[in-house]
Image (cartoon, rainbow, N blue to C red; front, side, top):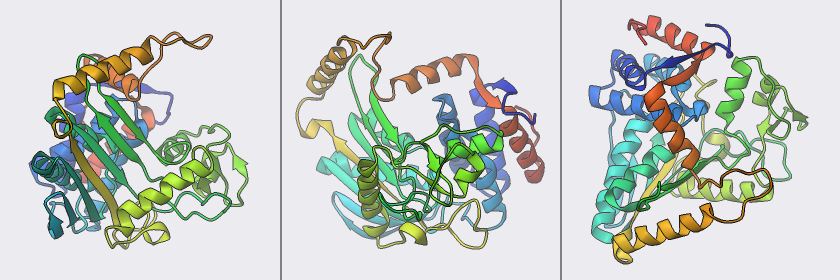
Length: 353
């Protein structure tokens, strides 16, 4: 199980249960362990390997070292009917954000729209996981996060921003929901980590080395910076996300956020934002969903470029892949399986996936 080319299909339920037991073994309460595990498995189901169970070992290491609070603790610092600032006191990012997103949904039910900033958190994996929680409530979900400095400002060479992901989930009727989830850089740094772990090159244009030169060497890229998507546009979006997370939360931002992979003495001090928009506050829900279907149908049936068989909406490929992998299993690389096996031994949990 040493190669990234060796892949094995793993049942999603088995993988979720296994990861939940790993988290429980280091003191995470059962219900929160399930959320942390489901968060990672959901990313793998969608094919977003960079945010899937490959992240479990580093989460577990930091928990074992006492660098992360195992059980979620929330303190509402300030609050209004549609807004709040919540300090999660160095809790697990996924379990804490799931609870805060439920707060955002509850507020939106009353006020029509909500926006909550979160401080003193940790990496929360894929932002879409929290945005899509709003869909079952006929709401539009919003989520975003800052993180350790990985990206230089446009025209600069020193990392000043995180990869600063954000997600929006929009319900539809008969069609699949529209779920946009992206980093503000060309590619999530997790994909570079996976490439380095598997000894593979990365495409030119993903990252630069520590001297500011374009590189295809994944290890050199990890010592350098990722590139903002769309040049100055990605840089502008990262600037906004930093302002809406760390700055608005009165917390840390930019270079003051610590790295989960290299700083084993301090918390990360990550900040997020989570929000919801109640569709019914603007008109009948069924009308909105019908119009979303009409909108999506128009895009799907529009003239395709040469060589294109189908036009996809944001998140559509991932949701289709999730359906397939729920049936057939999740393909995990040999390196990820090896890391999980090592983690299971460290935690005293049988490696039974």
